[in-house]
Amino acid sequence: MIDVTCALIIKEGKVLLTQNGPESDHAFQWEFPGGKIKPGESAEACIKREILEELELQITTEYSLIPVEYDYQIKKIWLIPFICTIENGNLSLNEHLAEKWVNVADLENEDLPEADRRVIQIPQNKVLLKKYIREQMDNPR
View 1 (cartoon, rainbow, N blue to C red):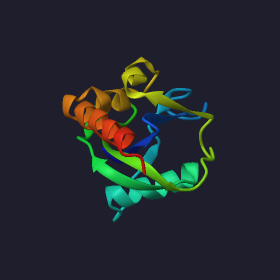
View 2 (cartoon, one colour; view 1 turned 90 degrees about the vertical axis):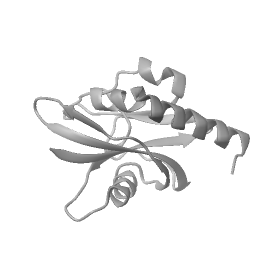
View 3 (cartoon, rainbow, N blue to C red; view 1 turned 180 degrees about the vertical axis):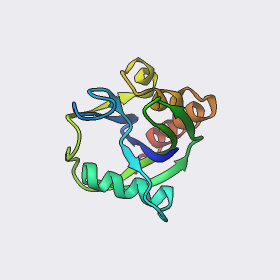
C-alpha cells in the first residue's frame, strides 16, 4: 500500500482541482493535488512539500480529514486528505495541465479519481469542509 496525501486547498469559498497529464495513472482527470509520503516523512510535511514542488505554493494545513483506502488494481493507496489554505506564493503548474476552483457542491460532478471522490463522499469530511468554508467566508483573513 502506498501512503499518499492530498490537499483540499480553499480560497474564496472554492476548492482547487488540478488536471493530470497524459502520463499519469489518472490521465486527464481532475484531482486534489498531493503526492507520496517519503520514508520518515510525516503526512503534514509531505503535503506541504508536494504542494510547494507541484504548485509553488506555501500552504497551512487547517484540518486533517478522514483518510480513504482504495485499490486501483495497479496500486493500492491510503489517501490522507487535508483542508489547506494558501499562505504564500503564486500558483504555477509544474506537473499538471490545468487548474480550476470549484464550489464544494459541484465537486462530485467533476471527473475525479475514485479515491479523491470517496474523500468528499465521507459524511464527516463533507460536513467539516462545508463548515470550514462557511467560517472562512464569514471571517476572511
